[in-house]
Image (tube, rainbow, N blue to C red; front, side):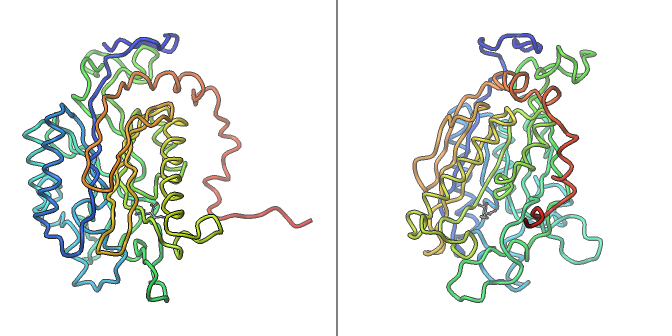
Length: 372
Ligand code: CDT
């Protein structure tokens, strides 16, 4: 049994729920970067992680290819950026382009989050069904144990009229995720996790926070929405994983203001908002988060922010990337630390007032009060 116990326990001691985790930040991948070259870089980062004893590695959103939703693409050009799960029989570990990475993860006994453009296995209409997807590979289970499809797709369906605008055509190329926000337990990541074989039941005072780690996944724009984090908080998540491709300069998409009148200032603000979202929501859900960028200037003219970081359950950045290139960030995190927030300030059972939250799910857009 883990050494941090029950709701009355103090939390000054270290727990044995420690795990070494990594974010595998990727530098730019261009339209003409060969798939094999990008995959070689991803494998190299995993090898470095293995050297450092990493047990869970997180790659960015749509990791293996350029961030193609900025381009206007016909259907025959589009499909090269998607991983075809129909051909892989619905098993992501058998995706032809990603297999080298799953094989390495299996060899190193390393869990992995990876984002990719999914050509879905199900196709009820016979037409392509596309999602912006991340999966979690568990080395202990030797299989993909959870899939998440991006819910909050940013940008537009139609391209901007201005020819020099940076498009973000995610609404054109993907369907909104249809899997919700399912938290899951990752087996084998921490020692002595309480399991059902012991006869223990979940949600009892002496098993809370004692089972296998509870994990949630998000993708890029999702991290800006507290609505996307809270479902994970409500499932007791101790760790949220999020890959991203965040533009550093796109006035059409982000709007302009006096404060962000130059490219440098816009990038500073984009980095600030990234950190603001992941630190606050980690704090407010008493969970760690691993947030990982694809970054640098893609195709010679599209800047993406870096700023990959691992954040603790108090909202503090534990480690942060220093470059806009391939870079591994590594930290040992103690998931036992989550108990304090979950049992005190954010003890949801004691403090939430759901009778007042209906508007959040009943209403989508803004309805202002009547004019005076
Ligand atoms: N890839 C992705 O989701 N990008 C969005 C662009 C900004 S929308 C405010 C992001 O959240 O970084």
